Length: 230
Image (cartoon, rainbow, N blue to C red; front, side):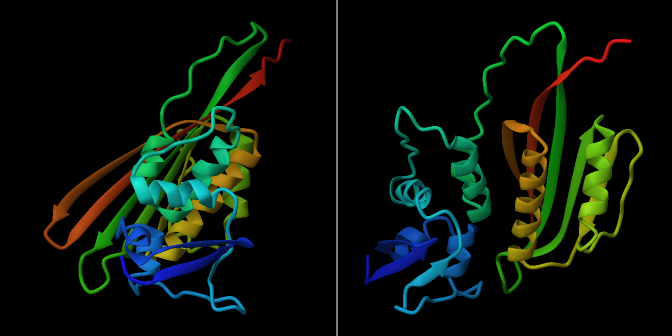
């Protein structure tokens, strides 16, 4: 397995092998330790990643075994899902994307739904994780959320915005893998802070051309809202 690699993740120090970190070459860690993304070291020479250090335990164990094992009383699934998405470990994202059971709602409430779709075109030339273009589409009938997203993400390279049919679309590119992941993490966090929780996720891969891969992600978020009676 070669020499051990030591990582400082949010203040927690882990030791593992380079082959473990590169188990999924298309992931963020695979790109970092394959030389496609820059790395940072702390004062002691450990590779530094500014993420949740405690949850990285489960990320690392998944890289070692390709199996997700969580304690019976584990209550941080939503946080772990965000970490899996940040590291772009798609088999782990799929493991965490099982639909949640539908719970009965009181008669004076209903369910608001937000759907987020991401289409990523990846170039196979020179850099295997170079993102040619990313399009994100958010669909919901919650007008206030759409307005907040539209105004809150002006710092991103927003080429298109379409609010017809309760839909906002963003198209970005070209951008690097880290920018693309950072954008989606920001959007997921934004929607979660609005009170929505992830119902399910799915990932689809396809090749349109010999030199391109397309990866599609889809998330469904839900939150309970109270009916307004006149």
